[in-house]
Image (cartoon, rainbow over all chains, first blue to last red; front, side, top):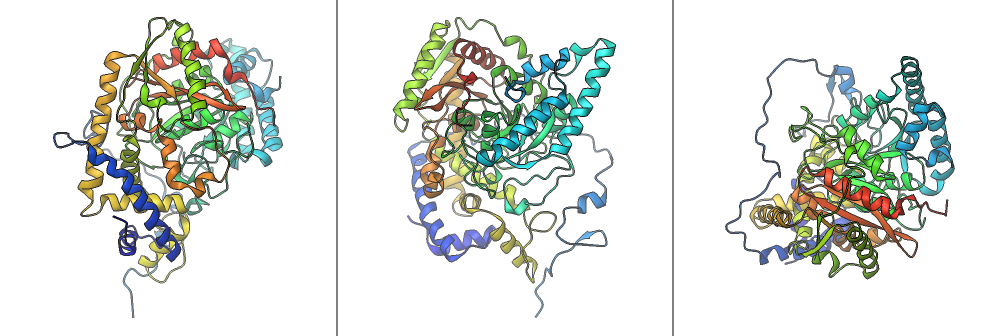
Length: 97
Length: 491
């Protein structure tokens, strides 16, 4: 089933990704082809198979919760597009009318 | 022979004898870069000042050790020029991931692999080109433009670690480290007549490797020969408390494997690695390589890995799903590109829409879709279940054989531009490098000869943590054939 324009727009919204009309049209075609190819996996019976999230046998690696120096604030802020008084500065979170 | 043509172990011997200095070696490589870079375009950022300072430091260490009579105890990579793929963090050196969104990002810390190489005294000459966020096969997806294959400048060097491959094949570095999520060190090595290793998942710390697909990403060496790959692997492997997925288990001495007998090793040859979708010329060259392994005393056995083809959809669901989560951090708040906007929501959307290139957007959308409500079970969960079956398939095969061998890639290096025009078809070229990443097993690429003057790679796949056997067999093959010694004539 090919992806609709609304499908791509919905997913782009979830991903907070602005797409042009041309990009949406292209992605509809390309993603439909990829998902069609992925239907190959439906041939395999996985009803009795557990999923693999990681190949490692380890789980929950813990360490002691010790206080240690972290990066200095000016170093952390050095790459910030905008900053003010030691904070990251961003546009308004809530829209004001 | 020019200094820039040396391997790391050859240079090490000359440095220790005092025949050359690290500064001379570094200058030779920097001059070589200046000479070939306009045609090859392997690097995104060059660091000549850093390199010369590190080289001077190395020369000081050599002089002190010579006075103390302890030269042989110095690290192997002291004074050796190193290229670092631009998805691996380097403190104080711009790290772009070949993306507009990180165009001016300067990491405040080094990746653990870089820390370990710096501790040995390796000399960073620059950051190399890659597909954006390591997503691709050719460097065609780089925001800085593609690198060129030194064997044929009209063709891709492979990817995503294509800048490393182009630099090594052009003698514009001595050693390199890249990252491999679905073949990204092995495929470019095969395309450029080089050696590369994807280590067992968990063997090398991922700390400081900019995350693409965390359950698949591994850092690995790319070098001109097997000995150099062993030296770099030995330097970067081992547990790191900063990466909870790095395995706490001693690292074997792989150097002692080089030169050991391979007689009696059982080598499995999957019939799927020579079937549909494989360029018959690639298959021909690799069959020839397999007969050399047989001459060396290895036993070849035909085996079957029926899920090889299924590994492509498994990968192209799991990797984009993980990527869509990992790349959520690029929102224009703390680092990187920020688009102008009047609200925060607009800023997120525009920053990402303007900052990411087409392949990254494709994967974010695909991954988000596979994880979204209503599709999670059908795509992501199913892919994770088939992942289990692919792991079991390898486990079963390794009950029967010690190593699995075949081509690295089903195709020869393609003309620049092809993958951009055929992105979905390009996914299929990952056929032979993806399943090892899904299963977490180590895999190596070794030069296997040429077809039409284009390089072909032999792939050797091992049991988890059995890098020693891969090095043993790769070295024996290399010594018997010497394909890796060939250098491109065009430069």
